[in-house]
Image (cartoon, rainbow over all chains, first blue to last red; front, side, top):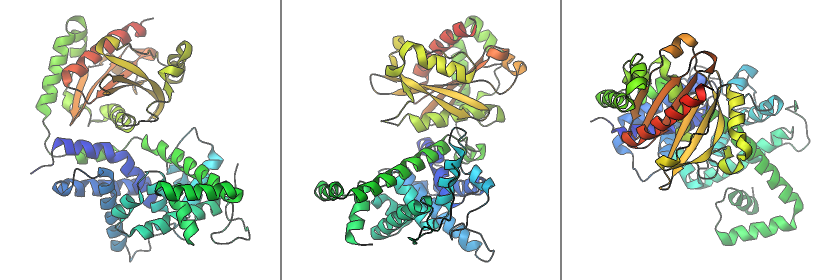
Length: 183
Length: 267
């Protein structure tokens, strides 16, 4: 049986936010959209498993999250470069990660570069709570992790982001600048 | 990380019950350094939201919408509805529109229909907004500032359509990025709290395409869309009316906009 039109409409409405979440995992817009497509396909296949009392975005995020983990496992033998270990990807990627012609260029690169330098687990949790405004419980549900883990990832991510924006290396209090403000 | 830190972060994320929140707030009042830190977190969060919200408006590749709608949908209904629209609009306008009518059901998926897709997405993003549905509200619209501003930025005449006779009041409008430049969204609301949006932009193509303008209807689940291009040459404007309303009701609104828009297009 095919998914009903009302369900498809819910998926369609969720696409912009799902794409945004995917890009917190992978920065390349094309790869992120591949992930979104996989998640949509899985959602359509398993539409009858969706409980209408739940927020569909939480459900879709959990599907995309798992799809991303599957993908990483599959490519584990290839050295997939995740900018999770403090490495800042080239600027072409930064520019593509959301283009807002109105925003201040210097500030944009600073903020996005700082965000990208966070470990993916912290970045994901921080954005789900801070930007998507998921509750801790929803975040735990979507990522299939305990509530306490959500709390520690969000708080560590928040502190680490601020440290990087202050020009401090993560965990260091000495103030060795790793990112220069361009503004 | 100690318990105090955990409580502070949970408070910041709105996760603490009132009693515990009050304790954190008391701590913040006594400790200016801590309060300053929280202000920085808030600034970071606001900056992230601003950056990430811009992302919502980037046009999604057509393949994603196609994935969602790939199973056979009921295109017949859309065709019939478009025919009905022409019948009601009738007369001269109907004849002019009929010339360009081609398979309205496919239009959204074809390349030519990508901007109505963006109109639908912009509708889906902003209509549920409770606090910031519009950028400039009707209360802020002194001396016709909103229409002037949007007209200037879009380089097409933008008029704040009066849908009062149809029971809809203007909420306000906003400027949006589109593939080739700015577009605008006007939002209207009726007494029942139902909202419709009007999306306006300069058409992609030149006068040749504007001449073949057609009035099209598309339905995607709950969401209905009427869209058309009006005027020719430099003054051509693309319109899309989006709403979760019965087709007949949406049509009445589309007709009202069409009549008022036609007046604006010929100053």
